[in-house]
Length: 504
Ligand code: NG6
Ligand code: CA
Image 1 (cartoon, rainbow, N blue to C red):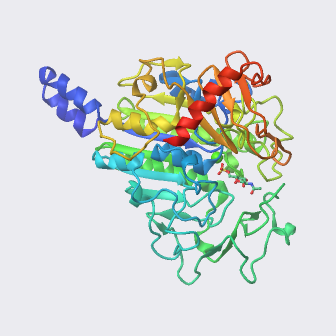
Image 2: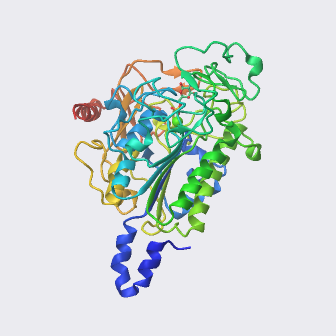
Image 3: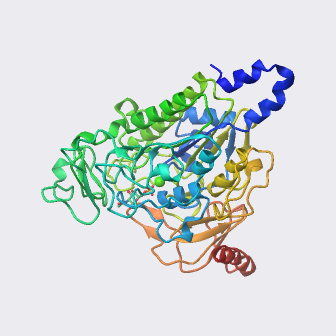
């Protein structure tokens, strides 16, 4: 079924239709599908033969697949903050991995991509993983009432979210800033400071961890046979069921599309897959030989397929711009003994790159990025240098919504590059993980930093070193040879770029 707008235009007849049609096409629907911890190599369109993700591959075949696309940070909160606000998270100290009771990191007076769409007259929604805090300050939320400020204060008219991550309490859905299915006789309390009297904890009761046990950390509140980070009491009826998370949030995203098919909409759909704890629905179990990590990728791909189908059946495919990307790079053991390491086989979640989640090496932030918009964009593969930081300005340009002064200070309009008509992309990208790096498409400089070069728990090469590092990514994409001593001029040039950014 065509939407009303198109029908109206057709009824005007061909002569009058064309100019109007182009106006109509300036207001496409926009969907950002933000995966959690899916690496460059975790999607078959990016070349690893060990995984099969047909729905994502369809989007790639019908759109542009970017091979040099970057998240701003190698963990979720700073990455999402930067994507949504167009401001580098490292400009603020309070944008590290948020607890489940963190205050809202994006302030109500900040503009976001969502508020831009809202001001342009779009219907806006956020579904899935949030991890950007709620309420005014840490621990101040009323989990039994209206939680404010929240997504509606930063541009999302509708929201159906998990407050933080699958492995952090509270393990409940929050719809339009109220906990779903909450029974007032069983009030929810959340703490990241101390356990509640009588609350059984994972560290004391391994026998209660019937679904999966931690490999490190994750030994506090027990919910559904899985111990988590943080303490929680009450809300028994409201608890999510881990196996059903993908089904629950995908259904809400699909419902949002159905309900708003007649008007331009912006949907931010942030999946729980494939973050830990990985508990894919039983129907996906065994679909790969890689155990739950592989099966969660298939579940993610299924979610993408549901979104595509909702667009197809409503006749929205042509005029909807859809982006599929990930908040940060991959990790195999992220704190649960779920056999992901043992069953990985030849699969390379990081693709040809070094590092992974938490790492300043490439795989920490070089993420999958696919854009499809059949009405305007020809299918292609693009090697242009692009970053999440530019979605704010570029999507604002798309909908011709002016960017207010002070808003999105780091975001540049690269819509033509995202549309495949200008191959140049960004001059350089800045990335964050323990320290900062700057990469211009050829050279990458990593600022000296403090911290361990290797984390044995997650098997991560952090890339942090007290020495400056310089890599010639064009010739050495695996970042093996530090050329800082040989090219001090290049080091100085890139270091100065970073310093200038700091001063902005
Ligand atoms: C870490 C957690 C990890 C994950 C990460 C955030 C431990 C031992 N590790 O602190 O499991 O939750 O935070 O991941 O607690 S992110 O993708 O949301 O940034
Ligand atoms: Ca993540």
